[in-house]
Structure formats: C-alpha cells, structure tokens
Amino acid sequence: MASYTQISQKEAEDILKLYGRAHVLKLTPLSLGISNSNYRVDLQDESVLLKISNDKNQLQLAEEQAILLYLNQRGYPYSLKPFALVSGELVYNYEPYFGVLYPFVKGIPPGPSDYTCKEVGAALANLHSINHDKRLMDNLRPHESVGFGALEILNYSKSQSCPKDYREAFQYFFPDQLKAFLDTPFEKGIIHGDLYYDNTLFDNNHLSAVLDFEQAGRGEYLLDLGISLSGTCLEKGRVITPLVNSFLSGYEAIRPLSKTELKYLDHAVILGLLSISLWRIKRFKERNLNPLMENSYQDLLVRAMNYHQMKQLEK
Image (cartoon, rainbow, N blue to C red):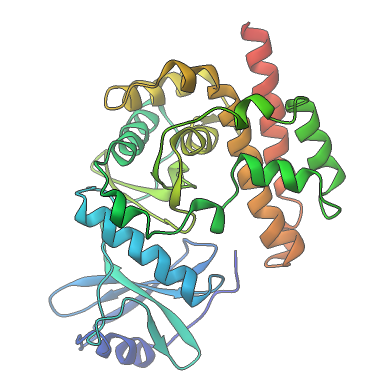
C-alpha cells in the first residue's frame, strides 16, 4: 500500500469548504486503497468519502472523474458520481494534497463465492451493455493510457526492462506472440480495467457499488472480462471453473458472449493476469511504491500457470 496520508479534522474541514460543505463531525481513516488515502467524513446531514491521491497525477485523476460522470449520465447504477467543487471542478487542490470527494456508500468488500461472482459478473455486463454516445465516449481516455492491453503486454515482454520470469511466462502462454488474438476485432466500449471482487461493495448481500475506476477507459470488453474473472473467481488464490461458471451466468444473463469472445476467453483470463502483473511491476518494482510488494507480480504469474494447467486438464 502507498504511504498513507494523514490529515487532521481541521484539514478535512478546509477541504470540505471548497465544496461548500462545513461542520465536520467525525473523520475516520479507511484502510482501503493502494493509490489513495481514503477517509469517511461525517457531516451534519450526510457522510462523504474523501480521497487523497498518493499515486495518480492530477490529469489522470481528472480523466477518471470524466469517465465516472459519463457513466452516471449513461445510467450505469454502480459507479460513484464525484462531487463538484464550488468552482465547478472535480479535483480539489489543498496545500500539498489533491483528490476527489464522493458520496459515502454503505457496504463492505465481499469474499469470493458463487453469489459474489454472479453479482460482479452482472455488474460488469451492465457496464459492457451501456448504450454509448460515440461522440462523447471518444473524448474519454483509452484504457492503454493507464493500463495494459494485449499489445502493451507483448511489447513489454520484448523490452530490456522486462523481468526474465515475466518474459518466459508470456512466451510459454503465447508462443504465437498473440498474432491471432491481436488480429481479431473485439467489441469495445468503456471498461473498468481492474474489477476484482475487492473493488466492489456489498450491502445486505447485494452489490451496492463498483469502486476504483483508476484503470478505466476505452478498451476491449473481452480483456475487461478476463481481468475480472482472474481476480474474482478465486478459491485459495486459484481461479477455479465453478466460480468462473457462476460469474459467466451472471454476465451472460445480461450480455451473452459472442462465439469469437468464447473462443478467446481463456486467452483473456491469462492476459488479465499478465496485465495486472505488469501494473504491479510498474508500481512496485520499477517505481518502488512499496518495497514489500516488489515481487508481488510473481503471484499473478503463478495464478496464470495454475489456470493454464487447469484448462489443459479439463480438455
């Protein structure tokens, strides 16, 4: 986790004044978040979520808020809508800090289960079923500006900075260098880019919010599905078929997969693991955001190998 930014109640009050809010009754630090320090702030008539950015720059943060506003306008029910400052902007600046403010949503991150997988699958399918306004959507960032798709993973595996074990894993999984996958056109739209089960909140056993759109942008739905399957359908750290089936039952009840997407689904799961593994390399190994997590990318390489072997045995 990034170094946690500690603020006082007085500092929280000063930030909230930028939003035309005052009278902070209680400030509670929350432990969730790698790229942010999060606080619940209780006011007289409402509770809000105050986020202080520890990793993203202000442009990335503003681009994320633009996506959240767009999703709200298109009727997506699970994303948070950022509050605007009195100035009309969506990202605050206060002394050395900058960040955003959201409504506080009740709920807790769930554990992996059939029910969790089905609900997360349905939420992702809802995201992938939005009726987009192409003109507005084209003004939003591509996923590749903050995340890693198939081409970025391929190119990184050939770079001098790529760790040997990551390169060898990629070559083992994709000896064809992803040629057929990259030559296949997949449906695109707004993707989350990191929808693991712990980036959701459940309240009364129902999904109440999808969080952390830090890697959201325009991208391929299949990659988004692979990422979410690889981080949600877990039992003892392994992706297992029964939970994948539960996830897909929730997903396909809303958005049935095409024959082409089904053909490349296993590719997408492994690419999903390589994508988040590369995200960890960039933050924890190259940028040293948290030395204790420097080699955490390897956990996802192991998960990818376990998934590959499981699928081989099922054939």
